[in-house]
Length: 407
Image 1 (cartoon, rainbow, N blue to C red):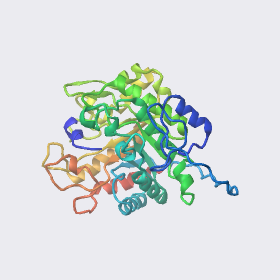
Image 2: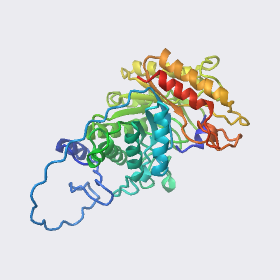
Image 3: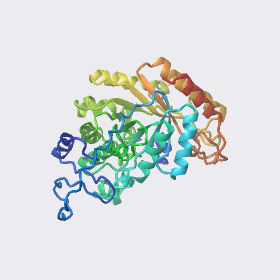
Image 4: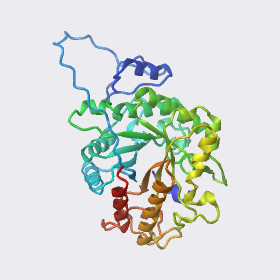
């Protein structure tokens, strides 16, 4: 699993009390648009541009109509994607295709380095593109708050896969995303003709793996970061659903250890701040099917209930979303299966999760996109499209599942 993951990269202050709650804990509120400050009191170490004399006041304009609330789409089948990155035309076309297939949720990075390239600089273009296209298509978005912006990283040379140096920086970023795109957020106020797309936020991608939390996973450090971010999101926009990675094991450079148990032990109050546990129950070996529970249970797709058991033991039970599951069609790699097997496994995985485990609310298939056609490259061939652009049988399996579990 570690080898596969290592190759994948994955405000307006509408209410004064919200701004006060966030600034009270030392979080620097972001600019409302790229290059524009909010005019709030600065956090220590920052500066405020010089003010200009105020011109005479024009007649008061009529207040803008409040946008409708963001209502999550009801579907239980989603797609994990790279839709944060492409051009507006590509994002729009892909989301229209996804919606026409009956899928109403997508998962995508909200890359910190791109959205906040400097402590006092914000660039919303990529996220605006995604959320606008999602609204037009009628699709809800699960945004992944990842990875460290180089200026905020604790790692050497601004390594994005090292945790942030200061958890308040991550919390500022998390609050800014929630404030802009959450229900009745700034983006929807600025775009009143759009029917708002719902937003949920996932606190990092696979922090339990040494490939995305370097040099090794640290349950206590992650718990502290997640607590800061979750509290900031709650203050900024309480309607945003918060997901925390809840796999049972951490994968270290050497060996494994408990993950979720140690996170909840490190911070017994963290469970009260989140809404959902996210899990990635890829089987080991990777060709193993979703109903094969033989051998080591920790390496089977069937380990999902163990997350719930750990959460219950800590008095922190929440629903579970499987935010990644998939099989590669790189048939000349050690992990690959045939296209027909990929489709069959995805059908069985979704059915098992949504019929056997009532606490599993959603399943996101990895991945929407196009395979690279290199049959020795496992990571490059999880996608539902072939390198030619045509769909693999797995897309039909996803469409069928989306139709079956529309609500």
